[in-house]
Image 1 (cartoon, rainbow, N blue to C red):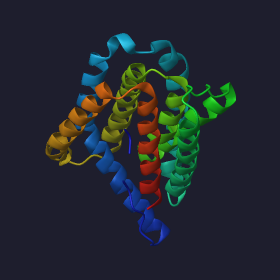
Image 2 (image 1 turned 45 degrees about the horizontal axis):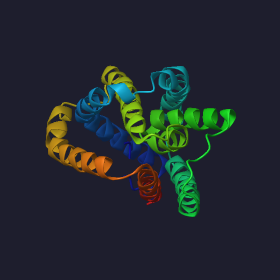
Image 3 (image 1 turned 30 degrees about the vertical axis):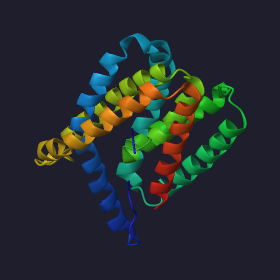
Length: 225
């Protein structure tokens, strides 16, 4: 999900161009990823939390998505990815410490904190196509069941990625090599899904939550690199 970018120390103009190139590459990956997400959604249909997704997550993420796309066009993205990375690292460390101290399910976030995280997650997704860490953090506190967690987030990414792909097609940001690139990464995506499926079946809820926070921590570190 979402998440492998190193920022070069160069002029703001070059950083903006580099951001656009990476964002386009990430969107090219989305052609293949959407197919896999659709498969995961179909496999977890009975676990989907549609009310939570369509009444809360999607509207707030969608609001942020539009703002993020506009900010990217107007301001570029220099430095903001590091802000996201730092936030993700801090949150993941705190959550891992809490999970190591107690096996009890985490308390849901307060309504205003949850709303803020979803909107900001949508903003980062609109800017970098990588707002997933914040949304995953929200889901880890709001959807304790691992089957519902995977199915609901898969449908969310499917919707958000499709919106981004369509918008980039109309804005001319996707070049003719997109399909070739998608075909090239399909084997790696398929292998990752297979490994994830095996892990998903084997681990209990507590270990699953620890794995989620561990992955978030690694994602935040990569964002800071």
